[in-house]
Length: 146
Ligand SMILES: CC(C)(COP(=O)(O)OP(=O)(O)OC[C@H]1O[C@@H](n2cnc3c(N)ncnc32)[C@H](O)[C@@H]1OP(=O)(O)O)[C@@H](O)C(=O)NCCC(=O)NCCS
Image (cartoon, rainbow, N blue to C red; front, side, top):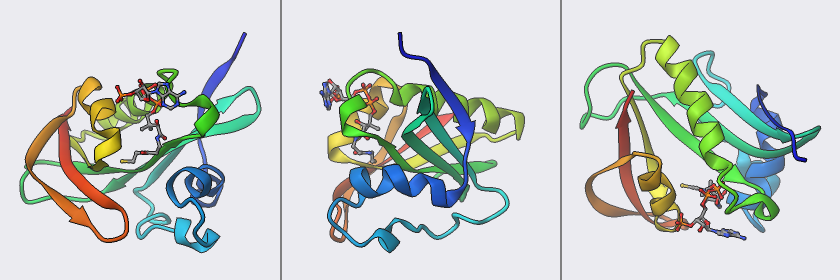
């Protein structure tokens, strides 16, 4: 039986999942994100026993569309062999639990169209119209009140 565990990891450790899943075929350094090393940033890793299989990063960032204390969910990815098994929600839930303890009001993210259903299923709400992010494609701004 699989034994899944979520732990805080470093920005650099997320690259093992960010690279194949979110930066496929691009140089390893493209995995770095602004805010990765900020003291408020939280990186979570999902482990199947000892193997890192999923990552999510939570960065303090505010959008004018929302009010109160806000965090952005970034770099959400599950290794291909583990996708579609309802594991991504484990990272979202663990992050939300930590953010609530930090008195965060809103969690938001820019979601790729192909991940839109995943976020909607996990109670995020669409804000505004779709928009383009260069070389990544069409996105939606989504949020959730914590
Ligand atoms: C988006 C992602 C984080 C969701 O995590 P997950 O644990 O796979 O989520 P779920 O199991 O709840 O659902 C994944 C979706 O893949 C579908 N799926 C089913 N079997 C699958 C398989 N073998 N492989 C991939 N996806 C599969 C599910 O039906 C579901 O589709 P839907 O959301 O359109 O309804 C993950 O799939 C992923 O890393 N995708 C690639 C990177 C990405 O797009 N990240 C988000 C950036 S905004």
